[in-house]
Figure 1: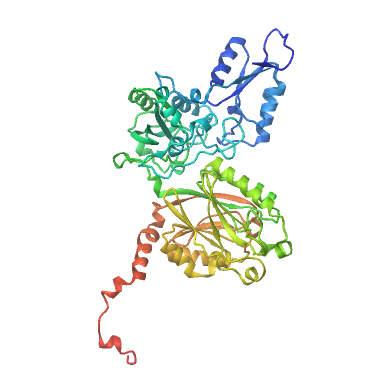
Figure 2 (figure 1 turned 45 degrees about the vertical axis):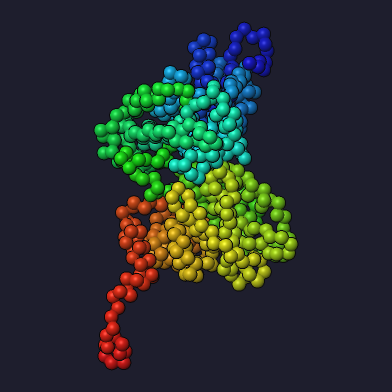
Length: 582
């Protein structure tokens, strides 16, 4: 406890409680409030608007200033951006800082205490837990969890890992996960625990988020891996005031009509988990839960059939710093919208030579800002847990002109691939860019994505190659004001049966704004045409409107191109061979 003003005061009047996540700040604040008869303000309650999204930092700071302007107050919570506000006004600052394992460890008699706290808080205010999916939780290095094993969506507080400390997703589910720096705990009998990853899905109607599905995976250290030993899953009937929102969950009210309420389900979980020690970690999410479901319990939509992406239409200039600021604001907006991947325009990060030829002539530019902005963007991708595909100039060595590229950043913040434009325009290849030759595809949550750039829309063979590679969605980035590009892209989408995400800069939007094109060739969603925008939209394999395109036209055309279905039906007929007589 640190007293920051007159130590001779008869009593404490203005108390700021800060510290680790799940360390007991709220409990301590409530107890002090009762003891001293001072009202308590939980900072989490100030951080959210009526739509259950984080408010802007300036508004949050204003709310906090109002709270600490009173004669007596207690606050609890963490946010480095506003911490000085409370600290400056407080006469006492209490730092709660137990070891990380204490924060993670559930009470021996109630291993799901953290989970129950999560569900209980939802009715009154947004749960302040925002932990990663199960696959991330169980592979997180304990010494580096930064107070809690989670990938933060809004960095900057002790509850959010700093850049470079993002939790990484393992790539192998059934075979176990590599353990990272867990040997000291696995070999110590005091820490021979079962790790429990818990994933919620919420109904999230306006104002009343409630859990409707929960899944848990139990893992034990076996050699150098964490291996699954059991799993639990259940649907929960939400209360009457919180009906299921099908848009958010893909579920229907009928699925939950005969299900028990959350209190019953969580009590059953407690009864099932009766052999501690456990380390329990809870995860709250409004997007579909990422727990794998056994076929016999799979009553909700298959999450492998749907993914949400965001198409970001930012203003692109020759200033990488300005571009980077716009990109990261769009990333945060996309992450708040539940997107797993964010797609940007050609040149979005570095600027594009075709739009500013004098600036890039001879490439006598400072490349350091490009590298700096890319690094910061990668770090934010890891913090938010989203994939990012963003355009930029990739510097080569010596006097070689750069590539016109799309950088592919995964949800751990790693640069995992890069697409370099292969078919350049006359202007590009005559004075600005070096052509690439690498074909770039990558998978996210069961969907395969490919990349193409600008005038490559005019080459059908590139789009057929994407189809042959099994691409589900082509990420088509452009810096063009020619509306014919959209028309051609819609044709490719329809003939190949693929989604096409078309991302253009905000300054090109009046001619043809960014859009998602469905496998049937029709627009599914379009960004506004008068400035920056971010649109979040689902690629949904179960969409009835896409059934013909995905499940009938696509396989039929593949068989038709292979030719076998026709070879067996051709005949030898004189009238067929004679082409000069009617």
